[in-house]
Amino acid sequence: MADGKKDDDGKKGGGERSVIKGDGGKGPQAVQGREQQQQEDANTNTEMISRLEPMEAIALDIGTVVGSEGHRKWHVLSRLGSGAFGAVYLVEEEGAKKEEKYALKAERLSAQVQMLAVEVQVYQALMAKAGTTQGKRRYPLLIDKGAWNNQCNYLVMSLVGPSLEDLRRKRPNNRFSMGTALIAAKKTLAAIVQMHLVGFLHRDIKPANFSIGHTDKNVIYILDFGMARCFVRPDGVLKRPRAGNIGFRGTAKYASRIGHKHKELCRGDDVESWFYMACELVKGKLPWQRVDEEAKIRDMKIEALRPGKVDVKGKGPTSETAAETKTKSEAKPKVESKPKTETKTKTEAKPKSEAKPKTETKTKTEASPKSEPKTKVEPKAKAEGKEGSAKKAEREPKDPRRLLLGGCPKQFANILELVAPLRYYDDPPYDEIAELIATALKKMNVQTYPLDWQEGGNKA
Image 1 (cartoon, rainbow, N blue to C red):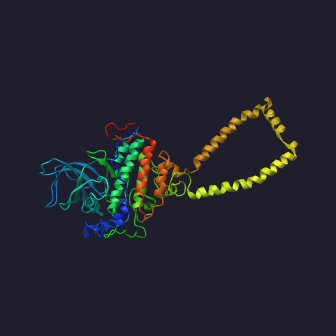
Image 2: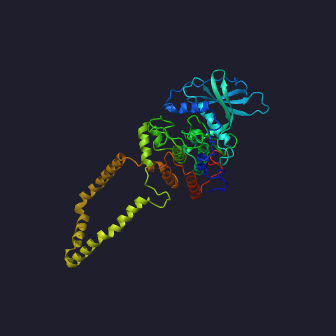
């Protein structure tokens, strides 16, 4: 049963249209310098960022003090982890009165793509708009940044807890309870909205890039902005999409259909990736998760999101399908009316031509003891028929849409219909999607709080 506790996502995801398109001439890039903008452009023009050869993560010894001249100094306590292009360390500020822990991300100066520069841009844009974007903060805080000892660039950020991917993997069948999965879907969407409000796409939406708070385990943060791109000009107007092959961005499992085609991404692509992630949080898997061929994954997604199968309002087929059904139903009586009349006339005229007695005779013959050999053969024939149909079913390709939505609330079919047609200049319907998630929570009447990872949460 739902405990009735109010979610911290009380405010809706609307308002992004006026902020992006009418920003008083300042725009979300006003806080960034020319040099950072050039770095972001260089990064986004690099072909196939996600397929670059990973460099060995920079190694900082325990006890090392990192800090640029004139900046705060950070004492390395331990290594938290590493990725393809950098490493993360637990640090504390040297000489600080309060012993507070932070996370330091380090990246080699020789890295082919300087992703930390893009991350800094996103953090600065988000923090510059703090208080103007709706709801509570859904991203870590940028504490410090700089270059150290001609070895690495670094940024220091507030600590976060485990990622949704780590938490999901610890659950039975790799999935959350329905209530937690829907709440997580709602919170992660709100985090994406905050990023879009300041003019940035994430371009690598997946459970591993969302983490719960370090102390406040009720909040979910969006992070890892190395693949991000600013999609608006300094005056707040949307940039034109770049033509041609701009390279693959993101993770194949969650990438949008356009992403698989290596074309320019938009806000709708972030939302499409979010939708795949939301399905996985509910179900624990995606139809293409064991598929290695990117082209096949793309084709499965295209088929799953093919428009026209579900009505957005959830009242039946789409208008086109409904019209076709109506036409057929109207035409049917006209075709059938004549044959019925003719049959009746013939029957009245020739009452002796009924084959009922013959049918009864055949039935008696089949039931007689002499027909036993034939009766014994029938189960074998039926068995063979079942085997044949089973083999045929195996050969027939399964519907990717059913595989994607199976096990999800029915409102997810409506969300799919909102997400599928989104194009570059479209404003994603954040409000409508959030309302559908709220409806699913209400209709299913599932436990929401405490969340699965909180004390007292669902452990089954």
